[in-house]
Structures are given as C-alpha cells and as structure tokens.
Image 1 (tube, rainbow, N blue to C red):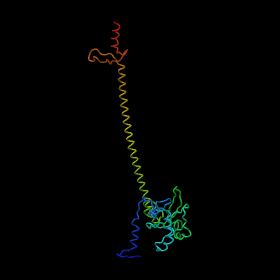
Image 2: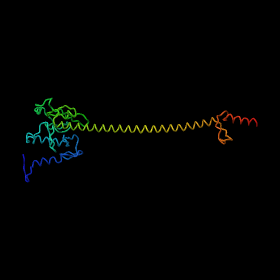
Image 3: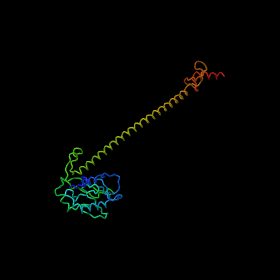
Image 4: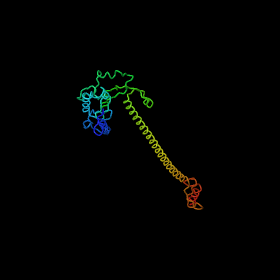
Length: 280
C-alpha cells in the first residue's frame, strides 16, 4: 500500500528507508539501543548485531506480539518462534533466553516456546528436512543454559558441500551464518599458519646467528690455544737448548741454541767450561 503525500513522495517508503539509515552501529557501543543506558548483566545481542538490556527488550517484544502483531499482514506477521529487532526490524527465528533469576515470566513467543502452541510449525517439517542449526546460549561461567533448534526447512547447499565438504541441511539464513563462520575460521587458520611460518623463520634465523657466534667463539678459542701452545713450545725450546752466549763468529752475542748436554750447556760449552775450571 502506498500513501502519497505532497511532492509525490511515498510516505511509507521514506519511513522504511529512514529506519535503515543508521542500521550499522559501532561495535564498541555498550549502550542499550532502546533506553540508551549502559548494558547490564544478561544483556541480549540479536542476530543483526544490535544490543539491548534484557528488560526493555522483553517489554518491547511482549507489547508488540500481544498488541500489534495481529494487525500486520500475514506475510509480515511474526511466528511463535520469531522476534523482531526493535531497531532495524530484522526478524530472527530465535527467542530471548529465559532467566530464572530475573523477574520476567515465561511468555510464549518471547522467551519461551510452548510445544502445544507451536506444534503446527513441526507438522510439515521432520528430522530429515529440518534445519540442523542449533543456537546454544551460555552463562558467564561458560555453562550451557539452553539449546534452541531452528524450526525452518533445511536443505543441502552446493557451495557448502563443494567448498567446505558440508552436506548438512540448513535454512537459507543459517546457511549464510555458517558461511560467515567458516570464512572467519579459514581466515584465522591462514593467519595462524602465517604466524607459525614467521616464528619458524625467526627461529631458523636465531639458530643461524647462534651457530655463527659459536663458530666465531670456537675459532677465537682455537687461536688462543694455538698462541699458548706456541709460547709453551718456545719455552720448552729455550729450556732444552744451550744457554751459553756465542763469543765469536756470525752468531756472536746470541744464545748457542745447541741441544743441552749437561747443566743447561751443550757438550762443547760444557767441556770448555769444565776445562777452564780444571785449569784454574
């Protein structure tokens, strides 16, 4: 239905368009999008990504389903297992969780699904053709609060089978969700593999540097030992050669360096010295 106002403007179209202008919100926004108050414990994040405190969202959904849902056209009317985001009007087939510690009662179609009222949903859907996606809600400690199944028709998707080897029934909306999840996991794996390769290269580089340093230190130590050995050899050579100073000839003034015979003297200088002693 169109409602044309002055200037040939479709009022309902403009109203609908305006509701989506600010649909994308800052991921760091920590305020309830109904009250604009800070988020409290047990806040709710809908599939569209918008955040709400439990109380205001519960009241809004209850009011809408009790008063206005029946006024909608059949194709826009929410089913028992569906709720609509108050901010962007996106419909999701997962209800709010129910908390015993809060003062809000169980309301069918809001935070509770009465099997007696929702059997019609399952009349044409069996285990074979039902979407296999399950929404699991955890508490702050990581314990499972409840698991809620999807009540829509599910079927296999060629892209999931070919690209990710998944031959599981999913409805279209959950197929999109699974695709996004798998892509994020693939990106994370690539990131981890790159980091692993980077760390391995870094380790190889560190090992090469360490090996080079060890080789350098070893060569330094070997040179040091060689110098010490040379000094020891010289000392040993000096200790086993004649210490007498040559008094004539080309080596005049230098040590004799002939092999020691007795008393640090070669045989020649030993005999000369002993001869001089005997003469005196």
